[in-house]
Image (cartoon, rainbow, N blue to C red; front, side):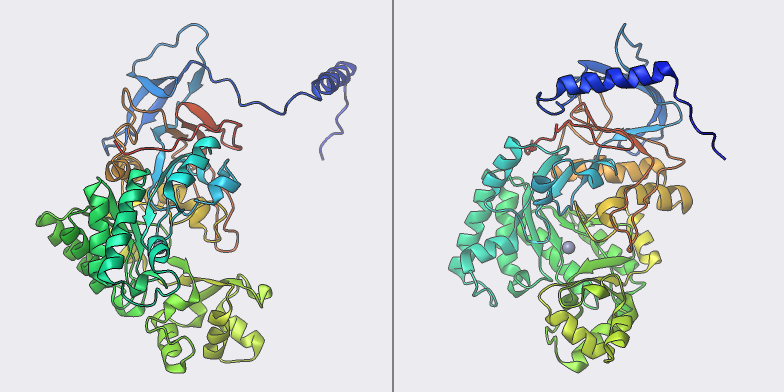
Amino acid sequence: MPRPRRTSLAARCATLLVALFLTGMAGQPPRQPPRQPPSFVIIGARIADGTGAPLVTASVRVEGDTIAAVGAVTPRPGEPVIEGTGLVLAPGFIDTHNHSSSGLEVEPAAVSQVSQGITTVAVGPDGSSPWPVGEYLQRLRAKPPTVNVVTFAGHATIRREIIGYDYKRPATPDEVTRMASLVTQAMNEGAFGLSSGLEYEVGSYSATDEVVTMARAAGAKGGIYISHIRDEADLAMDAIREAITIGEQGKVPVQITHIKLGTVGVWGQANQAVAMVQAARTRGVDVTADAYPYLAWQSTPRVLIPNKRYTDSASVRRGLDDIGGAKNVQITRWGAHPEFVGKRLDEAARLLGVSDIEAYIRFQGDEESGMIGHAMTEADLRTFYRQPWVMVASDGGIANNHPRGAGTFPRVLGQLVREQRWMTLPEAIHKMSGMPAARLGLRDRGAVKLGMKADLVLFDPATVTDRATFEQPRALSTGIQRVWVNGALVWTGTAVTEARPGRVLTRK
Ligand SMILES: [Zn+2]
């Protein structure tokens, strides 16, 4: 039993003094951002430099926002020293697929992101982006978050700008020309490329040529094309082929985002997908991909029905079969039935006293509906992650209801590297830093090297792990002990600091 604590007189006096001191501070502005030391040194850590090279023990000096020395560094008198023995120091993680565009404005601290070691987020994926891009970036410059920001221009966003509500058709040649000019405008305002979500409502009505023309406009300005491809299910191979075609004809680097094989009909075919991408790369098409380390996706229930006949029993039966049954549909949002959130659709059907098909029809018909599909295989994910052109990205973000929003990067380091040994630690770090930096064209980030910006992550490789689950999707990861963005400490291992050093990044 714990002994009752006896408070000494001295301790009580100290408490009183602190209380008086705090009272005296009342009326002053709230906590100020901590003063940055002009320089500091991290000693004794093993460094994963972001290139995939083996770990080496070295010390690092940060001066201002820059890595000023790497190697044998002797701390100067009075210079703060961070002890890194037993830990790994890596470049800050760069997330090429992140849904925090509005989250960064609502919650600039971005706790769920920095606690994973993320220091740069690329927002505006899946065809849907802030608009106009320039105004959004200006707001972030005026009120910076903890992390650096990159944005894409959204294909569907632009489609809606030009075609409006009449989007359920291919665009006319004139409309395509005007959409391409909006891509150019967005690039001039700071976008890093074009994103598309060809499986989704607005993007799905586009013809390949339309996307080629718009992607070409992004490529002409040095941007890339990232795509949630047209199908991640039975027609996934066709969709991968289309993404390659768009890159090849549009003369633009293409990234297949959250690459996956999400139906029974294509499970186990990762090698075929890899072969197709490999062949394209061999003939000079610049194709890469990213993946998140979960065997389930999150979207709207309508993506289960490719023919869009959402109330047709046969189509619904087929859609549910494709995912392995209603038991693999987990409800994340259902406006009319908040009590079903977290449950599987087969259970909801039982509670409603209806068939799985009828439950689905009601579920998809609710404007407020969202689901997680438990629909991928471990073997396919492993095959993808082992490719040298596949990087780690979350498809998550602030306030996400899928565990990838808070757990992606530590999950790779804990589950996939330490426990299952799918890849080495330096390889994984490369897929989280150097590889995405190269993809986005961020030449001064993604490496622990002299002269690079000081976006850094210090973590314990023996304990780093995700804690977010499908039931508790926002539980923070553990084991990431310190995170710096542009030389400023933003994460202490248990909390965010007051610093908001994130910058809007530009293409170099
Ligand atoms: Zn997506």
